[in-house]
Length: 460
Image 1 (spheres, rainbow, N blue to C red):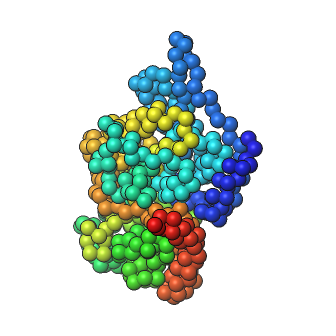
Image 2: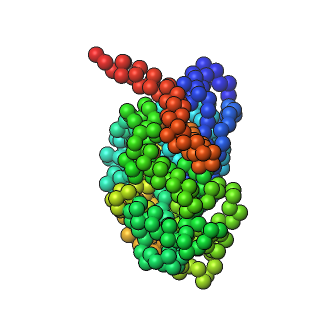
Image 3: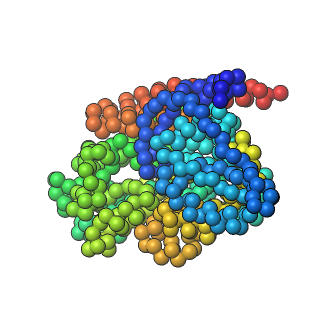
């Protein structure tokens, strides 16, 4: 397909929004990317409709899913097709490392799928490109999908300028994984719920385990931890409607001081992810007691830790500055979106409704370990009796999206870059955050320009 005229106009649209920078970052916790350039690669649309044996018209909808989800979701498709004769679903599995570029390329080439799994931090970007169909009218007439049935913080990740563009498919947030036995040895029978008590517990653990072990492992190259602490302290991360950075403001600086103090005082090792050869072995031998991570590790810890340790580890919601109510965490995960270019939106919406049913979400959890976003699904005994998942259920009542701007993944990458300057390089935190805000404000310059133009056009 020759990408000229309209295609080039879309490339220019992407240039304005992203500066030709494509950022791949943690979304589901399963992968980490790097900056890269993307190339326009022709995508050949699959056949949209054909006839069946009886001569009736059969519609085919295309569904793009990423990583392990793309492999497992195909097991649910036969049931949908039985319930909806005349609709066929073709699932295309895409590696997470290639997903962002391929979706952008498909949008430029007008060859997007009908439905796709989209990391919820990507929704503002694809909405800004005009790639997604607004779902408000479809939701209003749906007997399956109701906003009140979803965790509010997760639902909010799909809303841009008061318009819904995605339906949560699975959720991802962060909680504490910890060694109950080692915490008890340090004199703490229960998990602390405030920053002050958590800090005291870590000091007691450090005195108990000695100089070559630590209270907590906080990888220095992960942005989630400082961002979570910042939100807990009341920082908006970005202020004035996502126009300016707020990292040097008092709220974030308070959180950063707590965060950096864990390294400074020897409670956390100055290690990145690659500095720990085998996370599970080190957790087993007690190199650290606390670790902040996501739901995919419930299964990993269950499989990789020895049987005799299974009763000695647990999960807990994150402590907050003043107690549980302030113990926020991130609202992550993936959503199902309907592309504007879909030729079969009605059939594609039926598939989204099917995947959103509570009993289907429970089956999907059993296949993948991905936690469901619907409240009703958590009433199933598969989840309600899982003591390791219970902390996630509680935490999901206290999650908050990162700012819904297309540039957020680049900004989060910059956050950890500047935080590491203080962790490893001795740069005073106030200086590092002022420099971060300056760079973030430059990144957001195009956003401010676009918002100002939008306001000017709306003015009478």
